[in-house]
Structure formats: structure tokens, C-alpha cells
Image (cartoon, rainbow, N blue to C red; front, side, top):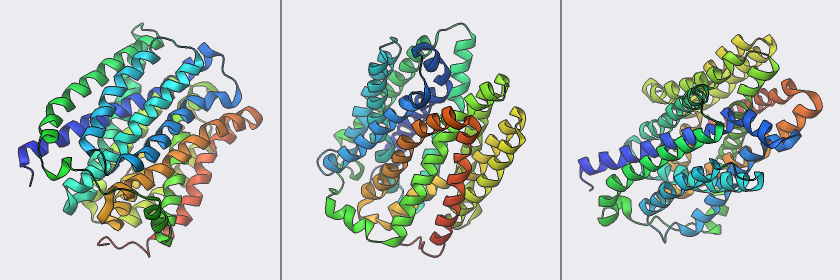
Amino acid sequence: MIEQKRKRAYTISLLFLMFIGAVCSSTQGVMLTNYIDYYGLQSSAQGLTSAFQSIGGITALLLIGILVGRVHKSVIIMITAVAVPVVFLTLGSKPPFVVLLISYALYGVAFGFEDSTSSSLMADLYQRRSAVYMNLLHGIYGIGGLVGPILLSSLVNAGLEWNQTLFVIAGLAFLGLIVYAVCGAPIMRSKVQVSKPAARMRWSDVRSFLMEKRKRLLLLAAFLYGAHQIAITGWSMRYISEFLGTPQYGALALSLYWIGITVSRFIAPRFGIARSKIVVFGFVATTLILGAGLASGNGFVMMLCCGLAGIVEGAVLPMLLDMSCSWQIENTSLGSTMVIFVLYIGFILIPPAIGAIAALAGITVGMLTTVVFSVIGSFVTFKLTRMDDPGR
């Protein structure tokens, strides 16, 4: 057994890296208008930075299938902690658009490793309380999602150019590297369970995973959640600021969304409600809330609806991850990787699609995809309520 003090310090370092990852990811939504203006982006090209980050995430998850069983999980996290500040130093240099896209893809690789591996580590470290710590991990991500837009907007308002704010983010990522190096080094030098390589993932394991109907439904739910969330985080600020003409509510809407997500992830496990029911409620309630916000055509109302949507759906992803890991307890890396893999597929496909839809039919129609995905997710996850056994 790993001693409690060391275990606590290591957990804190993972949480801090997750926080930084959310701040870094928030540059997608906050900086979208800057990227569009600086690089003269049109139509579906407006969603390419987000799509390339997600392509990187998918690449990471494919590589995890190769590395897991060969490389210690804690070493994988260290590699990502080194890569992120390097990527954001490159982004801050105002590179050509192709290099910007490649840089976001590399960041996607780094965060894809971090997200999946950290989720697996939480399941390994806290098997009896995995749902609590999975929500804590992604709750911290929510806090980063909240702080990111506020920090970036504040830096720009203080007079920094968009690329200079990315240099600041690079400095924050370097701080994360230092914290993890201090807290993670004792783990990597030790022979405790958390530093051991996980069971290898083979194509036969993936096929076996997909043979179960409940797991296929869970993956579809994860895809729909990813498609839905990337539409909100990537386009709500632009929709409220540019289309509805209320820029004072744009960044605030994104922040309120992450506040809601954070609150949800911290309090949801305390209600004692079945995790599958929390997932269903998240999809249904989000459908109603965002539908009302889009119907209002009012920036202030849409801002409030973004916050409420975060509250009702925040626990959806951690609960899906916990379900997958508990159904695959002999190989939690496979359970977490499968969910995050399809999540990133949603992240890849939707931003360019919304950009194309917005160019053809208007951004309101593009934003309606958030409601469509939530409706479908409601029906898919309702079936999971009869298939989820927390003990398996």
C-alpha cells in the first residue's frame, strides 16, 4: 500500500495538471475570434483548431493502447507535463496557421494521455470511492474551465495581445510540470502499485468490450456528450458576443457553464442517486434549458442557460467514466480510454460541421445541434438505467 501522505501529494499533482489542462483547452473558445480575425478563417476552417486538438486526443488514445503495459502510468503523465509548456510557447509565437493546427494537435496528444491516464489512476488509487474521486478530478477540470476564460479575457483587457496571453499559459503549464516532478518523482522511484504498468490493451480486448450492448450504449452516450459539449464551449461565446450582439455576456457565459459543471461534479455523488439516472437527467434537463435559451434570442438569458446547463450535465462524463471503469475493473485503462476515445470523435467531427452549418444556415441553426445531441442522448442513456450494476 502506498503511504497516505505520498498518495495525497500525488493526487494533488494530478488534479493541478487537470486544472491546467482545462485552462489550456479554454483558449479554443476564448481565442476563436482572434484566430478567425488574424488568420482570416472562413466557414468550416473556423472549427479546425478544435478539431485538430481532438485529432491529437484520438492519436493519444491509440498510442495508449500500445504504451499501456510497457510504460508506467506515472511516466506517461510526466511526458505530457513536459510537452504542454513547449506547445504553448510555440502557439504564442504567432506561427503560420498550419503550424498552429499542428501545435493544437500535439497539445491534444498530450492532454489525451493526461485525461485518460489520470482517470485510470483515480480508479486504481481509490477503487472503493472511485466515483467520488472521478468527479473530483473532472470537477477540478471544471474549475480550470471557469478560470481559463476569466484569466484570458483579463489579460487581453489589460493590454496583452492574444499571443502574449498564450505565453502566460505556457508559464502556468511549466509550473504544473514542476509540481508534478516534485510529487511524482517519489512515486516513479518506488515500487508501489500506482507506478506499475497497467495491463496491456489488445484489439481482442476492444472487440470484447464492444460485444456488450451496455458498453456500446455507453460509448454512444459519450460521443453525444462530447459532440454536445464542444458545441457549447467552442461556439457559445461567439454566438452570444457576435450574433446576439452582447459581448459583455460572452466570456461570462462560458465561465458560468464551467462553474455549473464544477458544482455538479462536486455535489452529484453526495445525493446517493444511481449514476445512470444522473446521466439521463443531465441529457434531458440540458435539452430543455438550452432549447429555452436559444428560443429566447437574448444574450443575457442564453448566458444564464449556459450556467444552468453546466449544473445539470456536469456529472455526466465522470459518471460515464466510472461506469466504464467499474464494468472493466480488471483493466481500468481500457475502460477510461474507450470512453474518452469516442468523446474525442465528437470533438473532432462537430466544430467543422457547426462552422459549415453556420455559414450555410446561420449560427443559430448551428447552435441547435447542442439540443439535438441532448435529445438523442436522453433516449440512449435511458436504456442504461436498466443495465448499470455498480458492482460490475
